[in-house]
Image 1 (tube, rainbow, N blue to C red):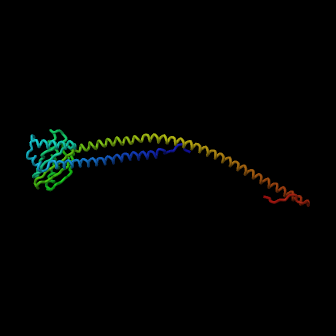
Image 2 (image 1 turned 180 degrees about the horizontal axis):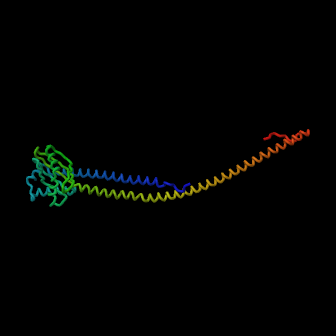
Image 3 (image 1 turned 180 degrees about the vertical axis):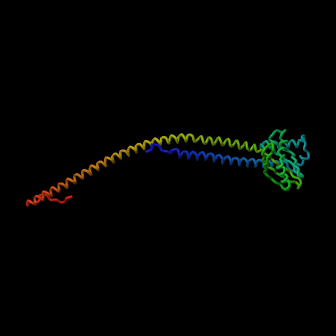
Length: 294
């Protein structure tokens, strides 16, 4: 009999593979869920910022600012500071408000999470994409209040996500409110989450190491116990085989004894018969009664 099982690691390898696959699948599912949640959160934040601009800068105030745009105008500076705080609080790349008239887009006031010297030029640069301008003009041509999420690729900033609100005054004139976020910010957040989840997944895999050690020790003890049991069983089988051989020899001896005994009894009966025959010839009575002759 075998002292050790031939495939004692098969079940454990299967369980370990299932565990590792489960960790990987759970990590991927959690990562995708977090990515969707983060993008939904960014979209909601952009839309909320655009609506906040619409509430902050109604049509009359935006028209007034457009007519009195000046670097030294106190009202313009105060409004720019407000938009800058909105952008910095939401960590947006830019927020802006402007007008659309006769297929021309004019950014009136803007703010950014960058420094004040950069935020206005950044806001203008974020609109310098043909696809975005075309989309804004399409919203304006519809002639109705509209809110839309839009993604485009900027040659300098890469992918940018926009929340656009268009509020028409007349068929030819309307006000534009927008909040923009560079995709690199979203990707950075996703990358950070991916790193954290990777560390967590590695930690979950490391937790299996004590289980591997415990399993190995348990299997070793089980193998030792099984080997001892096999030895006992082997010894018992050998003892039983020896006794079986002894019994076979005893049966053969008994059979030989029975054969000799039967032959002797037959000879005795034959001798008795001969004695009775001689007595009969001598006209004497039989001495022996014979019941059976084999």
